[in-house]
Image (tube, rainbow, N blue to C red; front, top):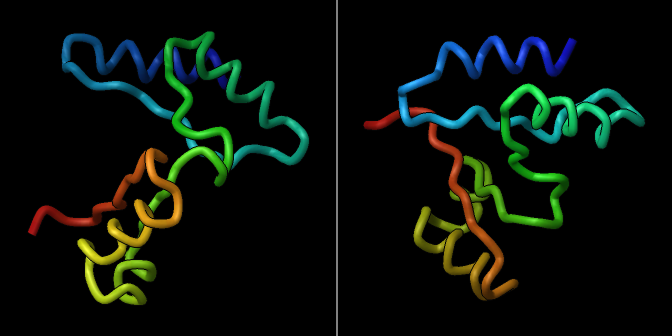
Length: 91
């Protein structure tokens, strides 16, 4: 079901220069199988766990005092680890 549904979404995105990425949110005990199914369907794995990249969210930005400060802190903690910022609006 996961591979089939992923393939449907990937087909809709064809020609749009867009990638379909999965999330870490999987059924308990099935993470590896579900992430594999996404790749079989033509999607890509985003992150396997919290260990492989920083994902800065609104609460992190507020706690750090701003986006720049949150990114700087992430780079300070683990230089070289990818840093992503969740965006809810373009404004």
